[in-house]
Image (tube, rainbow, N blue to C red):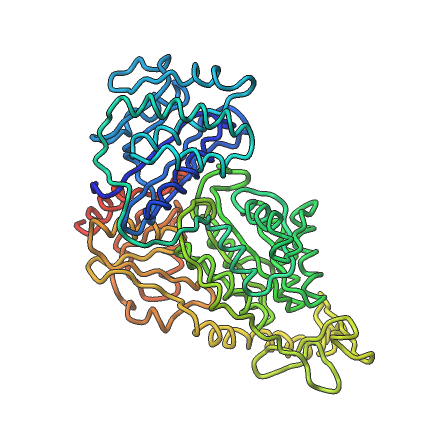
Length: 558
């Protein structure tokens, strides 16, 4: 693999600050004009087990991490044994001197230094930062200033420990072929996919966010709660997923833009509320971040097993919007688009993503100034009818409160079938008319969504490869080494027939994180696509560029 990419791997036990070390290293790389991609591999444990974080950096755009590491820092013997085979030919593997019973390791008195510098609990997370700075020729002053700004407690001890270790490694005179200081201008802010989803919804006017923690959607709740005062978004940790979804519906009824998020297990509990949103025509935005299932599954890893679940969420028949971001930039813009589409069409919308995009981190610039909030179709009629039958299927809206409606208005959202006023009905003709009214929204949503990028095409070679969601990131990294055309539907419902017309009757390879394979079947059901081969991964881990290059070549030559 290429010489212009440098990868750092940090391994140890949960609770030792591995993720924070990786984030600080990513920050230092960005400040030296490198693009970065960070991935955290962790078990569902508070302490113990084995965790590791990877940061890959380059002057070029980064879409994924690499398995072969140029710098490994192992906190314990288990990490040494697990990652010894992942060191690159030019790589350096650092560990504590007590764990160095394998040839080729660089031994350091890590635990001894921790005991010397900390009177109580030590902070081993300083070690990878000091080693990285020493090996990559980052100044001692910059290292110390970064530690002071990124770690708010025990600053003198942290700096003294890092300074001592930095000096030891510098004296070793280790050679590093990678030039950290890039001569280019890059985006300087690091975001996870979930942070960008939250920011995108906020840019479209998000007023309320409701959630119950479930990995990998939890960090949307945490991020918005942390930024609540600054962003003006009221963030509520509900007692359950059912409560979160129903509270969000209540916020919509009051005229507030609301969103709710979960993973597959929590979203399963929201099915009734999702159906309610379809019946009351609530513009509620759902975030579904997938992990392997069924049930609790592999709770801290990635998958695309919830595609059919999202497409067919809820009981009964009603329009919904479903789309999946293919990049970090798209995570931001798509959250904005879906919030606007939900309100313009008065239909529930789902942003479907995966753990890989939700929790990985990269540097990206987001165009906050270009975002506008859509306008709501407020009724201008003298007599307000909540479910007025219209040609578009979209009825006018008014909300409780003297500034939003008159004293004579009856604002009634009914979960039973109803007539235009919202009053319940079982009359056959009335039921038929209302179902047909809602169905007309399908055309409306399709027309509205066409102002956005509904399909992305990368490259122009052979073969043709289809993917969706964060799998596109993995494939775009592979495109650095092999030529092919990558076709990525962003919108899945409404299905972008118009944009995909050029690929009708084409032969293609389909790549996804599913065993069934759901996306290939979905494409075949929607268009005359001939699936030449399925490239599947379903162990919870992302594809590496090396794996995809090999798999695509084999599939194309089969």
